[in-house]
Length: 257
Image 1: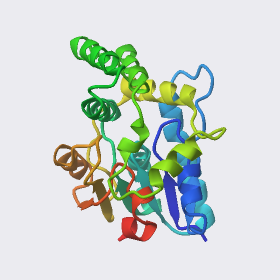
Image 2: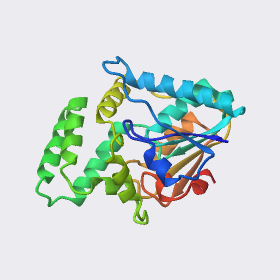
Image 3: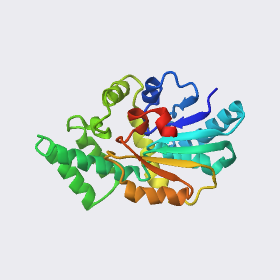
Image 4: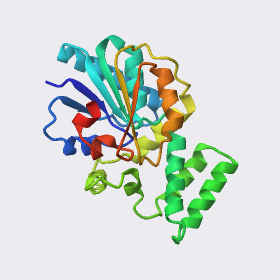
């Protein structure tokens, strides 16, 4: 019987990455985030509501509170569940939670540029970053993201040096049909940027674990750790030997430890 409700990263990504990595993990409900509805005025807020509805349904079926585990952007969904259904949450486990997804993505872009400074298209990334810095905005943010795709092996930068075959598996799954929904990624990300407000202290008072990857190119744990602890003062913060995806680079047991 499932006892862990898992919220994958993204938005726009597929939970197939984790599901195929852990095919025997019957205790985990790998919830697939639904796509953004066409012309929806607030797709991020719709996603929050969909997560809450599915979580409550799962808890009712399970018959007891469940552990909420979330990766990257999924941490915002997990925080929403903990705030609005604290009695249904047994524990919260946040894996490399991105509090500010835009800044995390820009940090990745700068890391990729530094490692590929001599690449033929490096100047396009440099120009896009300079334009964003001069006049930040979502259109210029997506210009950076578009230019970033011109550099080689960017997905591999998400991972630490001991990740083994995890980067290849990640890319292979996301390249399959349904592996990544770009339209939803843009719609949900833009709505998040437009509607997000600083999070206050959570109503959930149970155990919380926050794992940061030592080699994560997207998150500054020294900066973000205090932010998550302000939301969950009881949180245990831990550094693990991974990049941005501890669950894909370590093990389910290590993430739950």
